[in-house]
Length: 179
Image (cartoon, rainbow, N blue to C red):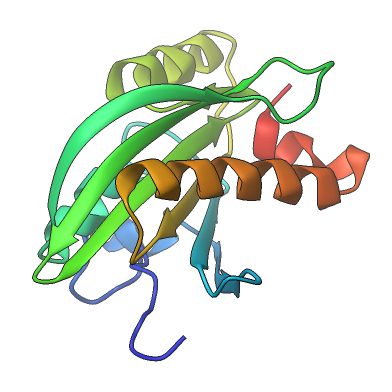
């Protein structure tokens, strides 16, 4: 992918907490670019954090992209049906723009066994675990495309999510989809 790279949570330009614990938010990150038969590029970023509490929590793409100089707008909720017998995956759509880069983004976060896309529901999920004395782990899954219209981007991203989850061994799907 010449001159195209995913925005990562660890970018020096990206969002950084004001304390020394910020480097421990994500213990593992994987960023990959995939090209389909028509030359469309899909970027995947998965970031895992072993602890999701009030000080260490996954960053929504709105924060990382804004800190990297993007304008982020148009947040909407959506669902992706990835298997006929499974509850659809709740995702968020946002648009990130900087100079000539127009990047529709689909993302969701797993906190413990729950899926979230917003600040309030994430706080409620963490509270639910906290009341049981559990500090959950968490992961951010983000898919984005460049060089396509918003509608075409989200259609391709939905198909990518379906293909990705179908390619994962059944015992490992929970990492991406919660319970």
